[in-house]
Length: 73
Image (cartoon, rainbow, N blue to C red; front, side):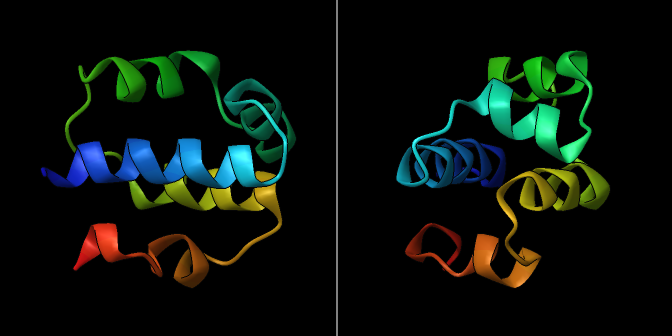
């Protein structure tokens, strides 16, 4: 699995665990809809750390928690 695919899967997984939609998470985290759409569609292969951090902010988790998954090993 490529890194961007693992990131997308992890975003979906974490949002679902908290009964939130991706849209709700990005709104809370202050992310731009276009940015997340580019990532989710696969047009962006290398998301910025700041994008992942804002997503984490929307979930009230640390970036360490985000990457604490078998998907990234």
